[in-house]
Image (cartoon, rainbow, N blue to C red; front, top):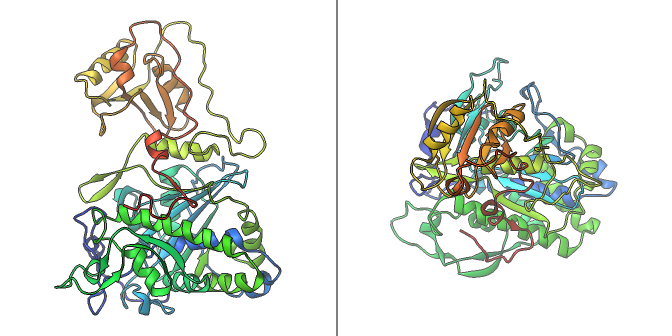
Length: 511
């Protein structure tokens, strides 16, 4: 990741979206560029298995670090008893990456793949959340190479954060700032790993077992080919390593709807399979040293992990996580054209579960006792509801017409100011969800008393939004006013059901 010339400001927009209509970059010779897929997950595998005094001598000289000057001052509070690690893949063309399909020779550094790994405080569970590269998110103010800071962007593609400053090294601090603003979680460590590390690691472990849902041909890897070409992968389970492993994890057009979202599922399965292989093979020093050496030579970390002793201490805290308790999922999403939009309040419920060290099914994984209990939502329900001074928005989360207007009228009658109302992006909400920003829980609970059975969800952005569900359509709340239900400790069933574990069947749910 050394110097390169700057590219034009519009070039990033030409790289295509995550949806079926998105494009794909190519390298000379017509082969599509391999994405920085799974490079990040491999750092999890390494760190979760590392140990031994040799680490101090061998790995310390390998690690590169990036500066922390660009990390924002207004970071989320450190409320979780667990740890959050941001894993980024780099497509740098330097250091042997060009031969493996890395970025263009004169290109800037970019990261097209990101995982936010939450390691629970009990050191027995972990969840890795994929953030698609084309997710539309707010990009906060970020530091440029000359020391100045950019203006925030209210809505931009997630992967553009890494390109801020247009340097060969990329901008991991800006990506970290973006993730912290998006999730409300404090990122404890950030790691960047490149193609060379990925390729070397898969060869060191003797290959990784994968499942290919259907025959794959050369044109599936390079859609610009005039003919189908030769078959490069046969349908079924097989072992892959090196460049062949890169080809597998970059497959997009030949499977499913051709989207990046489908590819993410296969990448998650790949990381799980790699973790399983390493654990089954055993971790003798003779096997572990080449693995760790290959990874750290291609890894850039934050200063908090920039020495062998710090890396060892961190790694030893991860080694006991069980495969079945290592979950992979994608941030709740929906298509918005050929881009990806975050689905709320599902995403807010996910971030809340991680902040409170709750597993996807709501169980406490905070070690001894409760890491952070769910919010107390049992105020005295006696007396009238007074919403004076509280502004809310209202959305209809059902197919019942006029429900948002009915709810807005009820809120106005109790003193609330309704700034707007209309239909929610989804009309399948079973219960009313009240999303509120930091410090607004009490006002949200007051509003919730008008909607029996409502659930409260804390978001990272200010404001109170009420999405009425089927429960309100069936019972509009003309009876006694009651407190809203406590904030859910788990995540919505449709989000949890979409997760896979590192021990799942290789061929299950690959698109």
